[in-house]
Structure formats: structure tokens, C-alpha cells
Length: 285
Ligand code: PRT
Ligand code: ZN
Image (cartoon, rainbow, N blue to C red):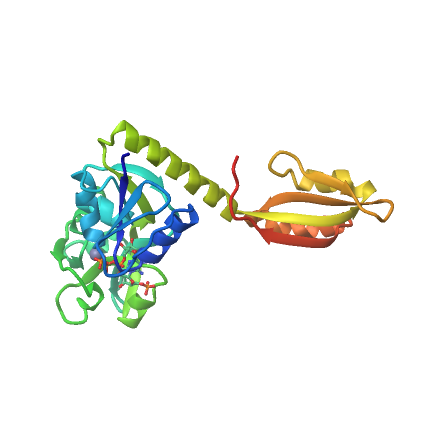
């Protein structure tokens, strides 16, 4: 029986969500910790724990079949891997920051500057596209201190909340690249491994569908059932059950997280009472 190897970050910003995703898919991985490798007990999967920078290379070589890595790292490393799925977590952006006092007018203000970054490939492609000539200074960490110590005029680094930029006296002036966690794959997977991958993707899909959706139950007078059903189309169609109290029904359906507050208001206007909203673990379509 073939086993699909998945490389995830050993310890860092991607680790927790990567493992969570695997566990939400019902895959039990024991002995997580100091080890480099763990085998799932109930699914043909093996997990490798690696530095994120090494993951694209291992996947391109087929040492690992899949990898979960930031899009920023995958694009920067430029290895021959397939993009299998965008995972929606670890969202961040790669941005250019300059000292707060710098009079930044447009992208052309970067002409002739030196820019410190750990992402020379992404940055140089961006500058070429923008027809800006700047000097790229590659450093491997603590990029945000480069202007302060006179190493560079500007930086290009990962930004999430922006507080690191601010606390180093910098301001964000251009977004170079938007990133999220990606599942990447070895382009030459065997037929057997493709089957395991298909099952894994089906499970991820079911978990993600559920995350954006809530289960909703409410009571309503019978004459407003049609109005309420129109607001709650449900997976197929809502369930309507009579209550013991004459003239009333209980309606069960699902609602998209994003539409939630808007719909709740309309439901109440239509006479709904006792509205319960519950999380859903999985949705199999
Ligand atoms: O040890 P290893 O090499 O495996 O890890 P690492 O230190 O290289 O990476 P890690 O764990 O820091 O980040 C892994 C991935 O998480 C990155 O490649 C991004 O895809 C993603 N990610 C999401 C982030 C951030 N958010 C983030 N905020 N990566 C880094 N940061 C850093 C950024 O470099 C800067 O220093 O956080 C600071 C900025 O954060 P704010 O919130 O102050 O703007
Ligand atoms: Zn790294």
C-alpha cells in the first residue's frame, strides 16, 4: 500500500494550522514533537517536519509528495512543483517599506535606492515589471532593522498587522505580493498516490465548506414560512416541521457565515423566534 508524504513546517507560523487541517480531516498523527517524521494511524499518510524554506525543494525532488508552505516561499524558491490547493490560512503580504520621513511619491521614488529583502527573486521581478532600477540587498533575517542601521534605504518584507514596520520607524508604501498557505505537490505522483490525494482533497473540501457555514434552527408562524425559506435556501432545501403549538413550525437550514447578520435581521422581521445557530463540523455535498 502506498503512503502519501506531506511536508509541513516543523515550528513556525504555519505549523499549527497545517497540523490542524490534517487533524480536521480525521487523520490521526501521533508522536508530533522532536521527530522528523510521523505516520498516521488511520490514513495512508506520513508527515515530515521541516524548515519551510526546504519544503519546495523536497517536493520538487519527490522526497515528499506534498508540502504546505507560504506562497511567498514557494514562488521565491521557484521549484518545479504543482500548486494543488490554496489553503486560506497564514495570509500576509510582501511589501516595500521606507523610513517614515521619506517623501514617497510613487513607485519611481524607489529608483536608485538599495532595498534589503529575503525575497530577491520576487522583488526583482516586481521592480522589472514596474521599470524601477534599485539595488537589491539580500539578507536572511531581521530585514526590518536594515534602514535603521544604514544597511539599506528601504526594505521588502512580509507584513501582516503592520506593527513591526511601525515599531521600526517604517511605513508601507507598496504591496509587492499577496500570500497565503499553499498545498504544493510533486508533479510526478503515481496513480496510487493520486488516489490518496483525491481522498485528502475531498476531506479538506468538506471541512472548508463547513467552516463557512452555520446550522440554523428557528420557530416561525406558518404564514411566514415561505418568506423565511426564501432567505434560507439550505443545502438542498430547508426542513420544515410542525410545532406542538398550532400555527407554528420549526425550520432547519444552513446559512453562510458572511451573510449571517444580514439574514438574521430579515428573519426576525419575518417573525422568526428562538433562533439557534450552531457550528457544523463537516458538509458532504
Ligand atoms: O524556521 P522556518 O524557516 O521554518 O520559519 P520562518 O521563520 O522562515 O517562517 P515563519 O514561521 O516566520 O513564517 C512562515 C510563513 O508564515 C511565511 O513564509 C508567510 O507565508 C507566513 N506569514 C504570515 C508570516 C507572517 N504572517 C508574518 N507576520 N511570516 C512572517 N511574518 C513576520 C514578518 O517577517 C515580520 O517580521 O512577522 C513580522 C511582521 O508581522 P506584523 O504583524 O508586525 O506586520
Ligand atoms: Zn524559513
